[in-house]
Length: 171
Length: 112
Image (cartoon, rainbow over all chains, first blue to last red):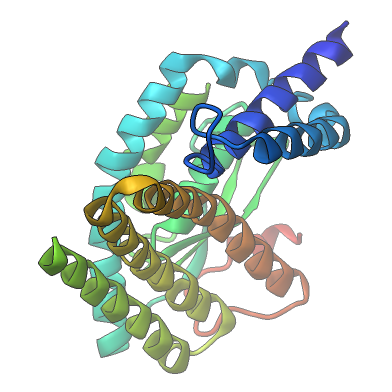
């Protein structure tokens, strides 16, 4: 039963992405018959192949629409702002060549895979910081930082409000 | 609309160009990854926004499908780019490449 639910949920998600991708292609609503049939077949194959991995470690909680809404707010608000600021900072370093790199360790105290992935990807997407490794057991982050101001930083020094948001969105 | 599109294209080209400059100026693989993957992501976001503006201005089914596909491309870019650069950096560290002039290397200390 659990297996059926896993496959069904994966199929629904994959098909939804396919529908968005092929919107405005024809006469059945927004889609053409070819796209609907082909998309359903492909989504089913994807569901069979990947459903086991997708829900294995607490993926169900992420289907909550409140989490999606907070995620979107985070993406267009604090994240985009931090990314723009960091881009200008790195642009300045590219031109002047003033760098002070190093690999630092800090522990943001996130427990779940989803929260850690979200934070690690946010850190990597922000220029100037690059996640090298996350310790599965302790939750320690190892981050390559282009301008080390403190060899034992707090999470806020490296990535600002990201850990707080990651906790709200994914944990 | 056209002006907005050209502004987005200009910002995109500027940051993509900076990414290319960073590739030459920075000393080692990790700092180069900062420039080459992150500046270009920011530049590509603006290039994609230019396509979105163009599609919205054009309108009709063709224009709308351009908008939607460009936005989906943006989503996948934001998902895959950090994963890819993380994998490259981690592989480089595992292969034993030391960060150039690093003031601290905690990952080396724990021996992973």
